[in-house]
Image 1: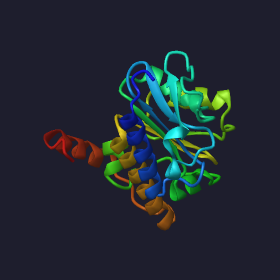
Image 2 (image 1 turned 60 degrees about the vertical axis):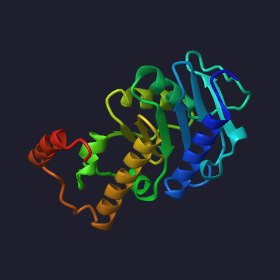
Image 3 (image 1 turned 45 degrees about the horizontal axis):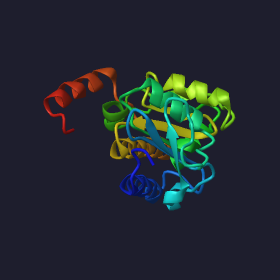
Length: 214
């Protein structure tokens, strides 16, 4: 199979299991994709459970036209995975997850839009977008998420979950966990948690440039 080795499949499966260990989703509620190169993308099989994903549940697809190479059907949300990978060359991993606190906030009638209760949100994620409820697996969801991710690394889907993108598995998992931490703080404080000001964020940016390992 072109460009895809057993080592690639093992790496993808191990990442999926790590996501489950961090309780970022339950059962078949999420999906994961990984760009191997400019031609090939791995994506979890439709209906598969990431915490228990196996190598034979990994779909190998061609990025240019979405052709499935190994006869494993990709996630029903593959539309935005393909769309994002094609438009953002800096993104190599996409995770759709449903963490407890983040998804709870997404189900509120008037959810918060400012999640900057900890430095890690503006430092690692940046501005967070929020979309109205759109039917999972629909063409509209694929189009709207793809459009949102042009200018954001994380988007909240009301009454559904979240989509986060990054350069590698660690990057994506870290962003998802920091977002969930912020949502937990907001929930537990009954949305009384103080947000960082623009001046505080600018000051932090200044020091981050001096210390990129932040």
